[in-house]
Each structure stands twice: as C-alpha cells, then as structure tokens.
Amino acid sequence: MRVLLAVFAYGLRRYSTYRWATAASVVVNSVFGVINALVLLAVFETRPQINGYTAADAVTQVFLAQAFIGVTAIFGPPLELGERIRDGQVAMDLMRPVGFVRWWLATDLGRAAFNVLARSVPTFAVGVVLFDLALPAEPLRWVAVLVALVLAALVGFGLRYLYALAGFWLLDTRGVDAVAWLLGPFCSGMILPLVLFPDAVAAILRTLPWAALVQVPAEILLGRTVLPGGTLGGLAYQAAWAAALLVLGTVLTARATRRVVVQGG
Amino acid sequence: MTEPIIETANLGRDFVRTEGPLLRRRRRTVSAVQDVGFTVAPGEIVGYLGPNGAGKSTTMKMLTGILAPSRGRVRVCGLEPSRQRTRLAARIGVVFGQRTTLWWDLPLRDSLALTRHLYRVPADLHAARLAELTELLELEPFLTTPVRQLSLGQRMRGDLTAALLHAPELLVLDEPTIGLDVVSKSAIREFLLRLNTERGTTILLTTHDLGDVERLCRRVLVIDHGRTAFDGDLAGLRATAPTPRTLVVDLVQPEAPIVVPGARTVRVEGPRQWLELSTNPAAVVSEVARAHRIADLTLREPDIEEVVARLYRAGREEPTALPRP
Image 1 (cartoon, rainbow over the protein chains, first blue to last red):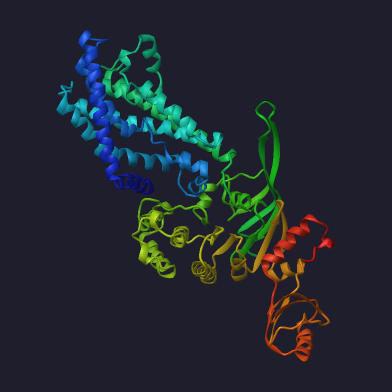
Image 2: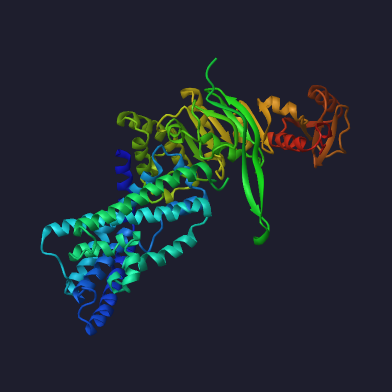
C-alpha cells in the first residue's frame, strides 16, 4: 500500500512539472465549454425543455463535462502502458514486485488527482462566472458529485487500461486509441447530453460504461438521475462499471503476461 | 553442494509467426531457443554470449519470468519465474541496457527513493545502501537531475543502483555497457567485480563487448542457434576454437617479410610485422632475434571476439572445416 501511495504521489508530481501545458488545457476546455454552451443555448431558444432538461441544465452539464475531461482522460492521453508494450519497455514494468494493474491505477489516479485541482476546478469556475448554472444548494449533493468524480476517474482508467492492454495482442494500440477518442466523447454525453439523443439511442448508450464518465455524474449534480435509486443508483451504476472494467483488466493482464510476447531484444 | 541459483534444462521457446499475403497467411513456428541447459552456482559471474538473434534475450526473458518457456525446466532462486514473477522480482535485480526503470520526468533521487517501498527495505538499511552506492558509482553530482537530462552513462549507473538497493542475490544484466564510453565501461566493470567479491552477488550478463567478458567472467556460456554451444572458462573457449597467437615484431628498419619456422608472416606495415604462431613463441622469438635487429616485440593473445566468431562458424560447418583467415 505504501508503494502505491508513493506511485500516486509520483503521478501527481509528474504532471505538475508541466505547468504551461496545464494552463493551456484549462484555456482550451473553458473556450470549448463556452462555445458548446452557446450552441446549446441557441437550441433551447426554440424549445425551453427537452426531455426534462432546461437550458441551464444543459449548460451545467457542458461545464461539468469540460471539467471532467482531464480527470477521465476521455480524449486521451492514453496510458503510457500502450507505448511501453509497443517498444518493449513493458519488460521493466513486469520486473517490479508490485501488481501490474495496481501500479498503473496508482499512477493514473495521481494524474487524475492533479487534474482535479489544476484543470477541473478552474474550468468549472469559468462556467460559474460566465453562465447561469443549475447548481445544487444542498452540501450532500456536492459530496455525491465528488464521489461520482472519483468513480468516473476509475471508469476512465479501466477503459484506457483495456485499450492499452490490447497492445499485447495487436502490438500497436494507436488504432484502438483513435477509435476510442471518437467513441468515448460521443457515448458519454460529453459532446451532447444523452437526453438530446433519440430515446432509443440514449437508452442503449446509458447501458455502456462511457455514460459513467459524464452523463451519470452530470445527472447526479443536477439531481435528475434517471436510474432507479436516484443519486445512489447513479453512483452504484458507476461503481459497477468501474469494478467490472478493473476485474476484466486484471483477468486479461494475467492472460496477456502469460501468453504474449514482450517485444524487442 | 550448494543449491544452484539458476537451473535450466532442455529449455526452449517457440514463437508463432504469421506471414505471406493477407489472403494466404501461413503460420510458421520459429524456435528462438531450442535447447538450453546450464546451472549457475551462487557467487559466479557468468557471461552469456551469442550473436544477434541467437536467443540470448529470449533466455533472459524466461529467466526473469517475462516470458513463459514452451518446454523444458527453469528455476531461479528456487522459483519458477513465469508463475512466480512478482516473488522472484523481489529477490533479483535486473538491468536491461536499452531500457530503464527510472522515472523520466523526475529527479533520479525520487526513483531511487521509491525502491524502498517497492522492495520493502527498512529505511535505515535503504539509506545506508544508497549512501554506499552513491559513493561507489559517483551519483552525487546528478542525484537531483531529472532522469531525462542524464547522460547514458549516468542513467546506467542510476539503473544499476535502482536494481541493487534491495541487495538481490542475483543480478541479471542485459548488455550493461552498451553505448558507453571507455571510462564509464570500466567504472561499471570495476563496480560489478567489487559487488561480486564483497557481497557475493551472482551476476549473469549478456554482452557483445568482449572487454566485459575478459574483465568480468570466469565462466562463459555461448549460445548459437538456440542451443548451448559452449560452457566453460575463457581458456577453454579459446581451446575449443583454436585461434593462433600473434607475435608483433617492430624491426629497426623495414625489411622483407620474416621467414622463420613455426610462424607465418601475415602482415607487413613499414618496420612492423605480424607473425601468426603455430608453435611455442619462445623458439620463434629467439630465432627472429638471431636473424634480425629488433626494436620491440609484443605477443598478442587472440581476441575473444575472434574466438567466439570462430566458434559460431564452427557450429554451422563441420568442426574440422575451420576456416583459416
């Protein structure tokens, strides 16, 4: 456990060395948030409510989504693991006396933690300042949002870990990543809230893991969880996907390292 | 008799390759390691040699548990590497010359600090070892430098330190001096020798640098085409693939090639001549000294590189058909 804490701290510190890159991504996330919000406001001009969402709800989800980009890494970056499998550096990772999944989880949660502080908070603050967001008054709801954020980070890791692990079989994960960075934002409610999709499509997307990255946390923030059990149901949905992905990752890791080739001489 | 620290028998590993055009793909099994068997006793330094593609790295991966063998038996520190990789990792140190365990973006010191938690070394013991290694490998000047800014030699010393802070019984090195300059190479060799004599750490290393072998290894294993081609000491290796010694004669002034029984002049360059010996050098030396005015004489042992090259060629042809240069 001590070692995982140390690795977590390393992930955090490591990203904190790239200050300008972080500042730039806050600007990018904020600007995209503003554009996205303005588009949605125009849509809601014609209809004040869509599937129970008001304009304020939609804009709130937009800024939550922008604030979650860095934490869940929904547009990347991929885990370094993929690249390390490709060039054979993974051999060194396998030589550490620590569980493989736990090692990568700890590094990535360090990265996520840094992103919460350095990207999520300022980006969301921009939304609060510029727009009239639908924010909850009760403190307990905010606690639920924080839990949802942690669970979203776990689901984000679980997905990216599987993308990277595919490298053991495919030898190059860049294709997987390219598809993933298209699919993730679309299926998660990041580009457009899922409530604006045709009902049948939305119903399907709500069963997939990506919904746990943005749509479900946004509904927890808005107090509009459509899942049975309300807020707790939403958190349970996220937790279930996080657990499923991590278990799958662990099982596949065991297979991969037993059967598959480490590249390079 | 002490338990061997490494034990392999009939070890082999195949890879399946798919090749050919997309629609008529064929799967072909390639044997990277066919039949390797050797044991290493605690305290030995063993050089594992072979040409590129001979199966050295594949063997190393099987010994460290990164790769499961297709057949045969392998035990390292009494464990089965591929099944007990994590447990084994805690007991051995591994340095792959082309790879690093150090954290690219952070100071060297941070990576070294992590190994304490990684291997559960008590804080005082870790500090004492780090101080010792810092002194031996002269890490002090760059401990606080981010790893990405280190030179190759510095990084290698950092990687060696990271592999040794938990005092492993066995150190596995894959080309530890690759790409290093003469000074760094020699520093690392002297360090490894000291580690072996003072701590009794067993060392298994692959290398293409025969300086490493000559300085470090009392025993060499040669692998060729996935099989053990030689296992013994350096003198034995030289005897297996006999390579003549050379007498370098510096004459006072240039002369015609020397003719002398028991030797053949193979090269002339101004006043310097190279004589390939086929008998006792003493007789040849006295004969040359009698007939010529000599400024200097040197007897050159055959390069291990030459010897190994001959051994590879010998493996491919009939042993009797040793080509003469």
